[in-house]
Amino acid sequence: MRAILMSAAILSLALIPIGCGECGREEAVKGVKEEAPPEAQAPATVEGYFREAAEKAGISDFQGTIESYTRAIELDPKQVSAYFNRGNARVRAGDSPGAIADFTRVIELDPTSVMAYYSRGVSKQRSGDQEGACQDWRKAGELGNKDALELVKKFCP
Image (cartoon, rainbow, N blue to C red; front, top):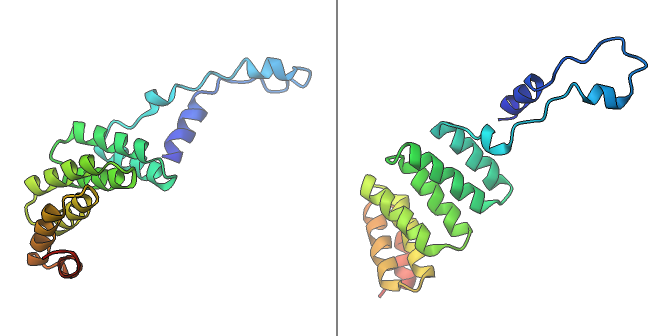
């Protein structure tokens, strides 16, 4: 991403006359073009949006992370990892209903996604749906997640 931004910045410079020792700063600045607005620099590929989302998550911009994964999903609606990652970003942003919806979509696309069942269970518990959480943790346990089985022992009748 930095290389792309650096290239854009380099390409946006106009030629400044060489040997213009008497030119004031004002003269030199006239040769610099204004940089394109951020929305014009947005990535146009799923991979680009994943990189953008990772950068935003790295600075705890979870709303921005969610938006980047949403754009990736718009380009590829069957992108399982985009739904899963967006679900995790929604958990971090405190949006349990949104997280549950994303983890549910992961399960629809990949019914063997152990971590989607586990994570949806955690989100359901946070939303007050203990029975739904236990069902998801049991399913995750059936698929081999030992941590989910520990949660079943601790929280489920």
